[in-house]
Length: 164
Image (cartoon, rainbow, N blue to C red; front, side, top):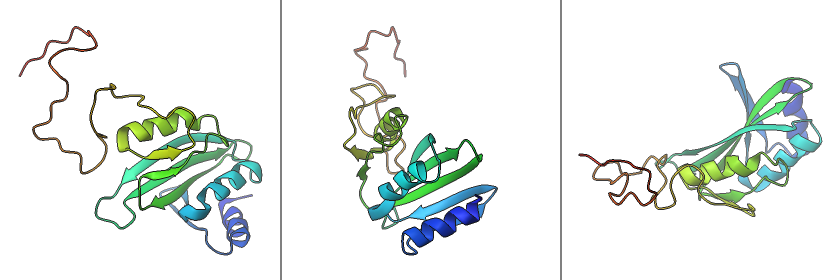
């Protein structure tokens, strides 16, 4: 099944609430947040998208729906790749670790860098930034001026010399 056939079946299954398009050689599927997890589960169970390659969270501070999650899925058999986009008003969504185990670290990364909380995640904590780091550095409203990137105490004994 190609992308157009997949879109047609998803649109019929979800009463026209799912839409999509192809651009720059990529296939995008837009899904409302309230049915997002159902669509993702269906893509895995019914359409063979068994490989979750990546999850990306995007912060749009000037939009009503300030956050967007993009799930990069691959059907290994047909080699069809889709990006499922879910727009969010608040930085909170359901975990998909029960669908794809690879979501565990991917969701932790987005929690750490963008501040999206994944409800039901088995171990949601920072994965890239040190525990004492404040904020989420990939949010577009993250302040860069006058920020102390590391404290001068070298709490983790990394042997870092702090200079100005």
